[in-house]
Image 1 (tube, rainbow, N blue to C red):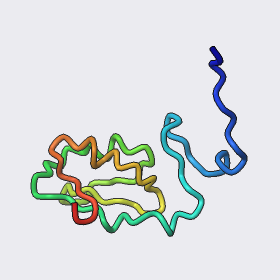
Image 2: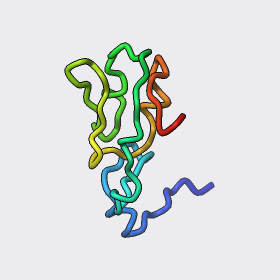
Image 3: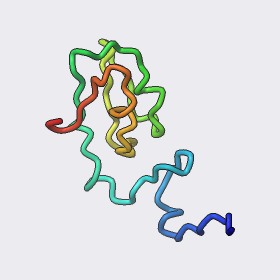
Image 4: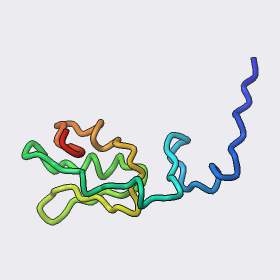
Length: 94
């Protein structure tokens, strides 16, 4: 059985920061990153878990403890949304 990892193309290698081999930043960020669509419900307890698990370090809690996203850093992996312990993070109309 061949255990060798497939080689990345030059384009993939230049794509950006890698988070444990799971997420890659795309080269044309302005067309895919819509962090304005993230919202937080009243169920948020300001635990900061989203901030800690973000592979891009794109989330910070504001002075009121509400998560805010930095557009030019976000990978749009939705880890914050999926891993929020209170399921308080929403994207778009969801």
